[in-house]
Image (cartoon, rainbow, N blue to C red; front, side, top):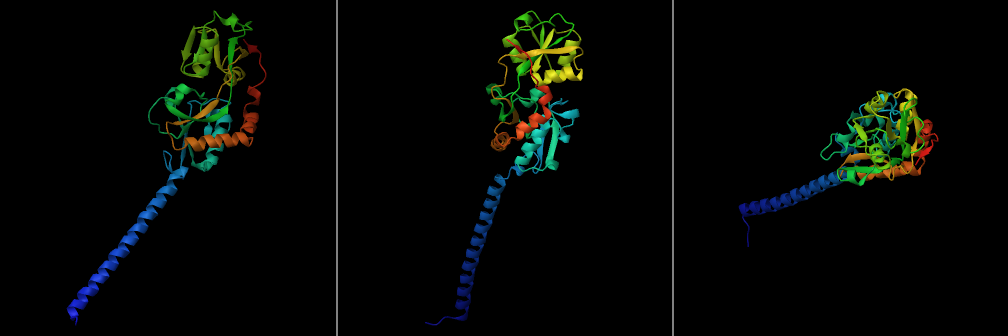
Length: 290
């Protein structure tokens, strides 16, 4: 059987076409696999899963108070929470230069809904109620609640919670201070939007006493935020159960890694060193108020 030139050419062309299709399919398969591999690699790169890829946006209060942040300047890394934030960032693979700070109110941070930050650190007590709206890391510090009165006020001699049963109490809204004031002292608790307003209210005589985190109370007195104020003691049984945690948006891809970072910093002694550095003078022994 003879094959004409045209038949040979058509046969060769068909063979080449099949080979080309096979090569294209192979290349397409490689390309698809490469894309899948890249996607998988990126999914494990936490630095690419943030609000701004390559940057870690951390929010804090406005203003941010000592001893948590010195001089309202979290970028300095000075103050306990500022230092913890940078330590966690490093654990997550971010350089200090890649940390971007922003400001939020306390209430907005723990409200449901999307966030324009990756994490928020401003003394958030970890509670089951808050976990319904946001994620938390492990606790990085366990504080207690304390009471401030005026040295020349009518409750200056109070040595127990019972002595405060007729006092008008002040607390910052949404805080553990408010919760313990209501539970342990009385129902006559006025709320304020921030610690500065709370301190001003005690100075102005709007309230007889205020309840806040012990570190906050000591700072208010030491710094003169409350003129002629005195911390009369800690509220018995007011230590945080789970501590203060870093807040993250609900179902954040960073939650698990952030929790591990805090746990690792606890395990290797870093958190204790930072507490010794920034909180020691605020955690001196105080009488217990029962």
